[in-house]
Image 1 (cartoon, rainbow, N blue to C red):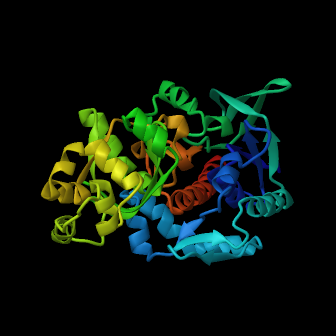
Image 2 (cartoon, rainbow, N blue to C red):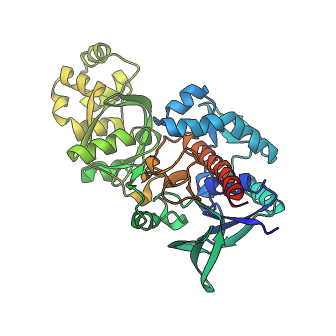
Length: 411
């Protein structure tokens, strides 16, 4: 009996997880194709400063971070604990950091990826690197035919199921170029425009501020915007601001800029003090001290925080009450998100309405979409990776069900 074939296009976490699930079927050949010279390029880059696999918070709270019931279902089926157990079976131990984030003990992605690829190889999964899908996907009887551009010219492959795991639109040089959006749109699949997520923003710094404070962290502040309010830190860049606190607020800030052309967040530069306490301290006699020295002496504010006050509320320095208000509620004007290619991840992609519960395209039976190709987004902190793994797993099992169904219908 001839084996059926599954074609997995994209060798990131979601594609590899789908391949792993499918490789458990003894009568199925699984082939993975990737445009890059090796698999998992973006995964490895994400782990360069410590691979944040997932998070330890309660599961109901964890899935609420996605704001999408469909994504929650994937993650309930493959939870953070299940992901840790999966890594453990690969020989990769994990630990919970002080912030609740979960990391491999070795803090790197490469040992996990090596062990994973070794296991897939042992299961008979074939890998084809430097195979770039050119958008051609056609149906031939009960199989799909996919065309690739390779160093040896155009090559085609046939399979009963196809898993598209092509990533979003960020980090183009690592393989996620978003070219697939136009190809699926031509096939009448609804695709929402790709947008930056977990991204930095442009700010119109003065030349003086930019020259003096570029690269400096702004620590222990509260950033508020709409319903969002969180304490953390960010970094001043030549063009604006980036860092964990900015990334956490990026979705509502981006949406407001798209709606209104700009977004004004609020910074609390002294979150440990009430405004009344700040005013009382600023109202104390300062003698010959300058206002900047007075801020440092009374509140511990100096350097970049004082620079931010001068940048966004220069008029407040003339009056203690106005200065206290600016310290607690400093307007922070953001002009635009940084380009998609610079973002950690992307929003937009294949509309979830186009997919069944197994992530199969309703208009293309046997073709599944996973990972960042889909229209969902999540904050950093392990949420992105967890859902990518979980979506690949769901599609893998969905493809098994589909193959069983068509096998029975043809027998």
